[in-house]
Length: 448
Image (cartoon, rainbow, N blue to C red; front, top):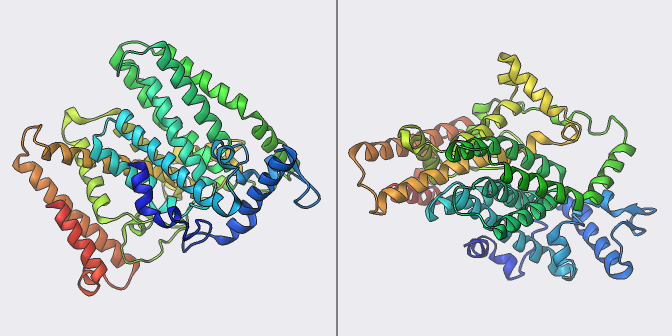
């Protein structure tokens, strides 16, 4: 499925008719000033001098692991594909990264969140192939996201000791997976991505641990030891990259990038969220370029209702991913801290962590909210697929009423968003433009 979706969305990269290093969403300066020169320098040093530490080709000589960190010289995919000629490298690298990213997200949804095929597919579509991630197709940020979903998968799979009988071979495989994914997150080339994955792990794992203890009636000591050992091995293998970054930060002025993480959005959370569901094509009032479609919004609302109303359908994932969404909103919008002092204290505490304080955490932590949205969209698709599969009891009148109410609610939300960001509402656009009519018709057909 990962290969098929990548082929559908990025067929032009498969056929080599275009490059991922420039486009309407990408910043071409980042490509041609940072990533392309970094990879060319790395390829020259590796094949001519068997060296990944220093290059005299940049300036008066620069350390590769520090000045070219965003080229991700120690990232596993970089090492595997470094032999590909420069004119083909970026197409191959980006395509393989999309496949790795989608595969990890599918396993995370199907095996850890226990979604069926439909729910897992929707999770992959709304999270991996989100517009926000397409924005960073030419950026090392996606290296961290691709490694991060595998890190979350192996961590949660290790904690899920009650799913099947564990063998010694299974524990070794999980340990290998944790080690490689930890190393990949460390060497992804973009600290903001690594910090985002660390935050997601810190928010999700406690709920998974609590669920494991409650279901097994014992403390999963062996699973935790495996996770700790895998993280330590990953850090040990990635220590050259860590030391290079530590030295670079140590040589920098204390004022460089100081307190970047304290930055918060200057728009309200309502305007921010409305900007994400407007289909007018207007750019949202913030630096995060993203838009949620009609069908994902409907599935998200259905997933929320499906997880709240029936008492026997709550899962640890609902609480864990809700924590991710709430953390993103409370951390990045000052309105909450203005009214509740503990929230402002939490914001300042997280933003003052030594490594975190020098990162653009506010803008790059959007995947936390995206995880929350994609989880409940997948949850809603999972529920709808179960209702229509014929294996469960047929839907009652209340279920049909909820579907209609949520469909109308989606239209109302999108219309309000369009009115707030433009001169006319989405319903007016629906009448005037063929593309909007096709989107609306597709949504109605889907809901029916």
